[in-house]
Length: 290
Image 1 (tube, helix red, strand yellow):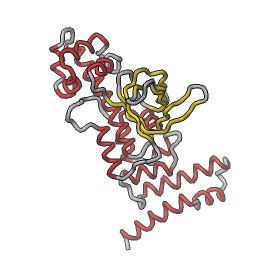
Image 2: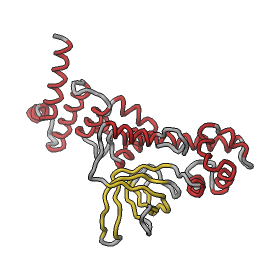
Image 3: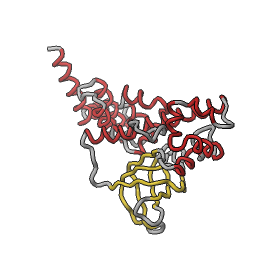
Image 4: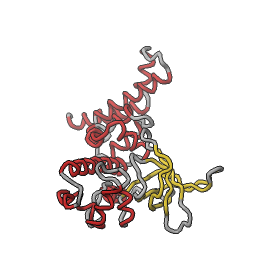
């Protein structure tokens, strides 16, 4: 999910969709929805929770969408899936369990997107100039040939640097979100992971996905284990065994603070999670060293 082009490039959010389709991970209980963000009613920078007013084809009035996103601005398009809910006070709403923000493709949408302040160095004034100069190809110009921005009156080398660095920052955010969502991480959890690890999210999760159970609120061993398997980490991994035992001990501490008691430690180590992890790791070692 990167803001760089509306041309024939294969975008990261499309790659995420392809990966999910290849694994057959289609949740038929969720309904798809896409449209233009007309207004951001609320957005929490800390949690990513947002309330959006979205123009959706086939709906006369704007649709209220509730979901999570690292950043979202008027003029962007969203692709979401979730369920319709009837709120007692606010009426019909769409609660998105999966939400991706994608660049707009219309001239007006592009102008609003660039003028929103999302990209440092571009406000409404320069957004108008950029769209007049490059039209629908402005995203591709910024991504592939940013030096051409110097053709626009008022853009010098200093502003060009601000624009390209702001663009790269947004691109990194979107690629991280697509990576996480493409490996089965829900949108709200993906936001929490990004807020915790920042630009290092992808290498850290790839290196040891079980750290999520330790570092991220709302993610336990079971969820981290599912992500690990999607990343290709085998159940026989020593990393998995260690994480399973740590999880079991942590659970025991939460249930019984006096975990220092040796009998409590033995019960934790004998839990189903710990036994499963140790059994798989032991079998793997036995196979490698007959």
